[in-house]
Picture (cartoon, rainbow, N blue to C red):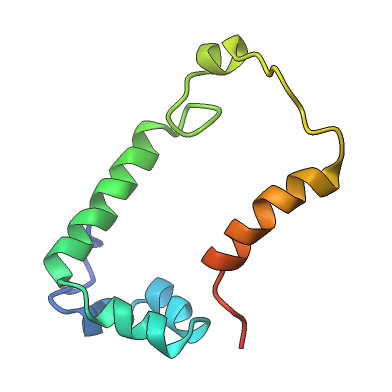
Length: 102
């Protein structure tokens, strides 16, 4: 799925020059940028290609990896009665995995 007018990406530096990854690098910390550059370009591109394939395979599904029928068959047994209880569970995870803004 490589555009025809773009040379092949043969290094992480070349990946970093693409508009998508250039934007990623601009908004992330130096340590995250270093982690990106430390990747093996072939492994990285393989993972990105597979992610794209999985997204394409599930494009007609309501929830990623779930058919409409499977989603409709779900039953929720318990709901948190108040939003603060939900946030209390989710915020630590979000804080740990969200990059800090510069």
